Image: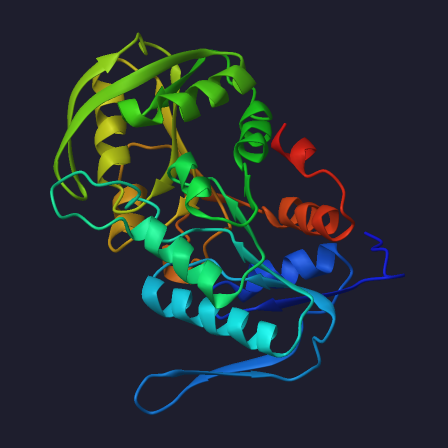
Length: 317
């Protein structure tokens, strides 16, 4: 990929959250990652050293905010601040996975809205733009007063599923809240849609109540934006098998995989779990039945288009 550097200069830096993805994005752009060092003082404070000039550059900081979420968010804020104080022309926070996205509204009295707070922090730190992927709630884009590009991983996942040539398939939303997301996937796969009716008595706990739609004899494809504890997706898969599904696949953009989610998925009736690499997964969480698809080319294309001042809208098709 050739970048026009006649009047502008581009640099890409990464935090500690997902350096593999950052390196892959840089490689697609034909660039080296910027040199920096992240360490901690003895009391746990984050220390950052930027080891090359960024004056006048457009800087893209790649840092998903998965577990430990608070540390990775703070790391991102410090990186943004450092780049602005070093006279970077513009700073774009590339956040493949946006932590606190599930706290996008008040569900009970006196609840915080963590997603809005994080947006305020990123803006206050000095970010000029945010690029992210498959926000848990689309309205989070409105929490920012700077441009936000919310890229979609579903076209990448859909292409992979289409390559498997399922004879009789149906896309299933694991809950009512994910129907819009699942319907988009069903349209891409040219198949019908079913819904798992569930209730959630408390966070990270779900109970399947009913299956809306016929799944008997079909390959059921569960679609969600993230898999955290895996409780919801596995209970939904069990319910689909009990209702006559021939086999169950599961796919998501963000494999959060809080322990012991990886083991639960491996031992479940789900035949294959399809995820992307927005979140770094250690080896012990890369289970045999998991397929990881790279989003690096998509992020690289978005960065190139932002840098070249070209439309990003075509990447949402």
